[in-house]
Length: 142
Image (cartoon, rainbow, N blue to C red; front, side, top):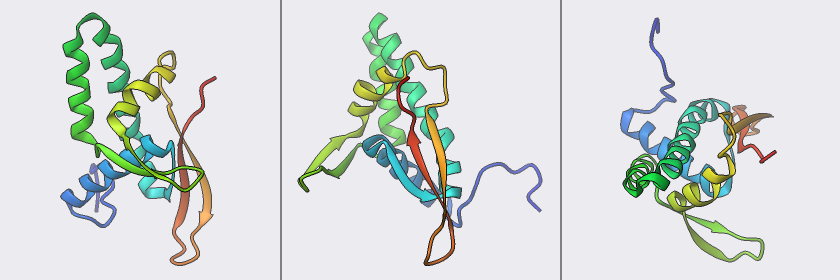
């Protein structure tokens, strides 16, 4: 029985879960929307929102003391993959620095929002293994 045990194991050991979380957070920051299983989306949502909060606080406190922003960037770099390769509309590949995008684009976008930066939309079931699928996306600026 799993009484008083929090968190999802996702059929992985600790190091695999950490790697999966880092990778999915970086993908969410780079693409701003990912399609994954519902269990992974539910596991990822609190971690991604905490990353955005760390970035927001780093930007605000960095205006007073730049060392605070450097500290927040180092925390973010430790908790997610640093780069991602993205394909644009023409099919060209380019590299995205996820930490830079988080601090320069995403954190200012949510500066006035007190939380709830992500949304989970259920899609249905996947054909191959009948897994529940969902889209995890960043909400749009109001």
